Image (cartoon, rainbow, N blue to C red):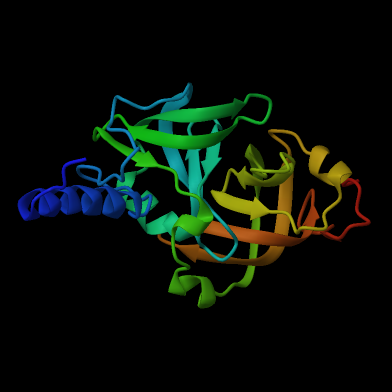
Length: 234
């Protein structure tokens, strides 16, 4: 086998270095032209099924006010790790037309998304895994205050893994989250159009308002503590 001369060795080293550095790039995306690692796809070249399309209605928030997903106007929703909140907010704005690629759970109107194309701007957001990105400082600093909300149920939010109802959007624009120990029977007892009143702890910010419910009722005069023993509202 003929050995490479010094010039050939330098070229080979450069090629190997480029390959390794590309493989080490984090999986992130961006408004404007996407910056993608090796193996990722350019807009229009996404490998995967088109699971949903529509218009972005709002960002999904957790009770601390962290952005963790997108809700479309027809109730279809998807989640991303809150560590990618800044990238998600940069890539989308309510009113944008989008196409979502991944796996659709039709009964829940929930998409396990791999990528979301912003048809309005022509950019694509490749959904990262939680461990692909570092923890953001805001995860340690966000706080909640006592809040209340009342309105009819406009949409449900389903847990991305358990596929049970974990919250709902009310007509007063509040996103409500059930506490983790809320019973499965209670979660299934609500219907679109039901009127509910909520008290709990949450946050209001420029993306909206979200609250974790501690008490719930049909009206403000008959709130019931929301714990594991509550099976349905009277």
